[in-house]
Image 1 (spheres, rainbow, N blue to C red):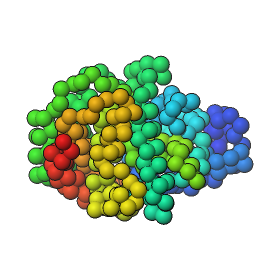
Image 2 (image 1 turned 90 degrees about the vertical axis):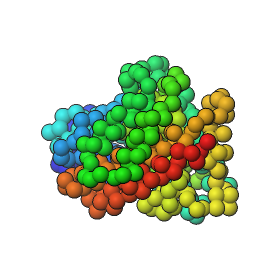
Image 3 (image 1 turned 180 degrees about the horizontal axis):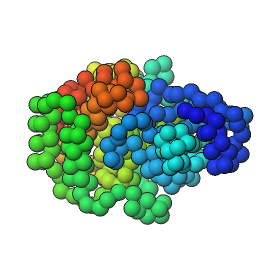
Image 4 (image 1 turned 60 degrees about the vertical axis):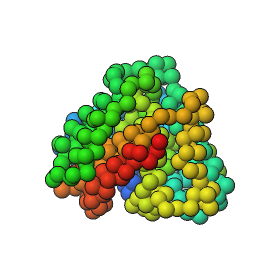
Amino acid sequence: MDLEALAGWMAMHVAGFEGPLSARKFEVGQSNPTYRLESPSGSYVLRRKPDGVLLKSAHAVDREFRVQAALAGSAVPVPEMLALCEDESVVGAMFYVMGHVDGRSFVDPTMHGVAPALRGAIVDEMGRVLAAIHGVDVEAAGLGDFGPPGNYYERQLARWVKQYRASETGEIAAMERLVDWLGANMPPDDGQRTLVHGDYRIDNMLFAPDGAACLAVLDWELSTLGHPYADLAGVLMQWQLPPGPEGRGLAGVDRAALGLPSDAAFVEAYCARRGIDGIAGFGFYVAFAFFRMAAILQGVKKRALDGNASNPEKARRLGAFVPRFAELGLEARHAHG
């Protein structure tokens, strides 16, 4: 990045900014390259679109900026949005700058080294913030047009099948079976239409350094108006994966010993916060979450093969998970009621 050009732009668009700038790329933010910026006026974070030819609706940093700006001061904690730059000549791609949040992040939900009681409180806070996202009055927040109308799951299935086909590198039998099953078992539209984060999990959140309070929810690239169960199922999908830095899940973990809730307890607490009486046929939503993640990972793999991934080696490793995610999606169909 041309830090001089960036500093010049920030001097005009970010109140109180003073150069010069230094920048360090975060390892996280696989999809949209993310940088910590240091300057005499403080710390900032920049997120930009990646280089290369991109799928039409992917890497929408302008949508990320818009939704987080709309949530400022709400029950959903987000970083302060400072400025959006749609002029690609400044750093070579569209980007936005936000305030740096000094919080604690966890790579995976086992939260290694954290006391069991605090682990439970952090996961409960995850549930509270998720219910808060789904409780946002989207019209009052100016987000009434943030997603198209109609059946969210029909729309999402069509979108992600199309994205998957656009980045396919060979036929995967389990993916074909999963796509067919999802199409044949689409639940009727129940009228719920809320803000949806699209990638809600513990490693996209920042917490107080010494407590359970969430300071910021990050990575809103996939956010839209849609069905709230997509986010809830996404959390459970993540937990079915192996623990550790790759899977970032809870498969095979003694949750009670770690102070972590069961899937059922997490769903029950979420339903209580939203005032709903349980969720019928929840397996569909979890199966869809696995399908969508498989499609996303296939896109990451394709970018790695095309030489455009933010972290090519990691992208290839993630791409190898696609068949396994499809198989887990097939398993999830009947595992969650």
